[in-house]
Image (cartoon, rainbow, N blue to C red; front, side, top):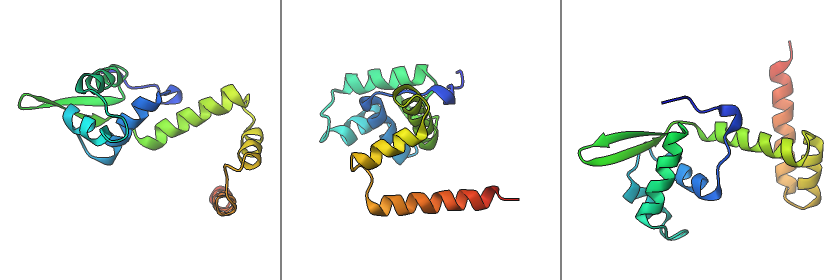
Length: 132
């Protein structure tokens, strides 16, 4: 199986929901994933199987066998997917301008005061970590 291009991982909302199930448990079957998503999505078993097959072809999930059942596990970590998808959003919607993204989040009330304080603390920590 080929390694996924971590720089370019774009997932649909459904694919993200399936991946979140796999990120929250070491491995799962199609039935377990469908059961986890039952309340919020109510997906057919075949739909979940199709999504998993497509994710496996892209190298984002690994497939194993336990007896007669296929078992799936995430082959890429959530932070890597988040980094790729946010990077793509930044590039395509905000033309690479991180300040424009941040300004948008603030102006649309997507960021609360506590979130801003936490972001400032993260920036300060990063600055200290890169200091000589």
